Length: 180
Image (cartoon, rainbow, N blue to C red; front, side, top):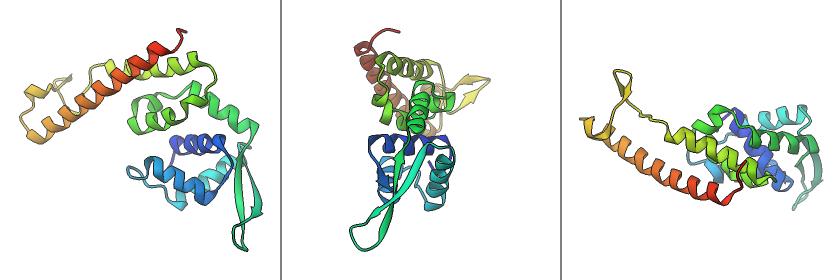
């Protein structure tokens, strides 16, 4: 999450929950995906500035716990609309990339229309149900039983187990949500 769409989505999502200063926002981002993709100041603060320039985030000063004043970030009405649009209409990469999808999933409850939530989950489920692999032979996905390398076979086994668990959860959640 060092840069790109998922960073701005997570900034908007966390600020939708409440205003916060940059240090707190960075801590929330790090807790979400820092173990996979650390968030550096060199990525975070320029992303905040871009969101500010677009009118999606506002910054104001407040008294700090000590003598120093701190910058507090607040989501604007336009920022909330952008967040809801991105949640309602995620890009293909937001659906196919697991880390980006999990960032999207973190804030999906912010969508007030449960039918919109269900549409997003159905898109992810459709993606997961399409045949895929890390490895291809002759234009076809390599099956676990056909992979001779034990480490590649391990990757395929882990991916299959993870995919099964996610598909099961998605199906259960979609059943709980209204039809479009």
